[in-house]
Image 1 (cartoon, rainbow, N blue to C red):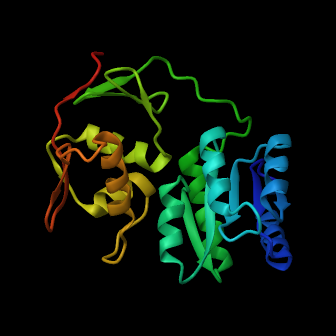
Image 2 (tube, rainbow, N blue to C red; image 1 turned 45 degrees about the vertical axis):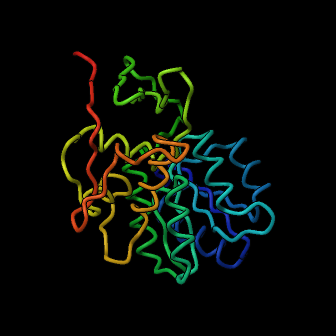
Length: 243
């Protein structure tokens, strides 16, 4: 029985692509496939998916570029496929906006569970209509304004700073809990909805990149402070809109 959710599988390995397509189709999803970035973009333009499963190592345009494109232009879930040893690729994939990752070789039931989890978190809109916020919800801190409804960060001169999905989620979590030390595990749950282990450095990378945007040009890092052995502390005063 088709449940209505459309999944696009992007992988240059045809046997793997076909195996994934057959398994997910049996689980009730409508499936499209593509073997490279060009075919993926064409498929996305003509039949927008609710979720894209994309291999990072593709010929020509790689999965990093496709993930970045999806985050900038479409509202859909993204799961990246990575080689089991590519921890750096995994971190970068999450940093540029992927909702989850799964290593190759993978267990089919794990992939299905992750697919369902991402669709629950992202909403899996069947009609692909952009979300219409009821009103602008702008939070002010330091010399910045963050429009939570439109994911737009601007400075005091109205210059915009582009944020990835991960950076936005991280900043939103800090703004919700200013003056409170947040552990890496808490931040990872808030940003990527998964647990943290000692060797996971994806949050550290995300914090570093967010710091570079909030305090560019080599300025002293004061907005987000590292608390050794505990996590990170957002020190700026935060003004939320009146309700």
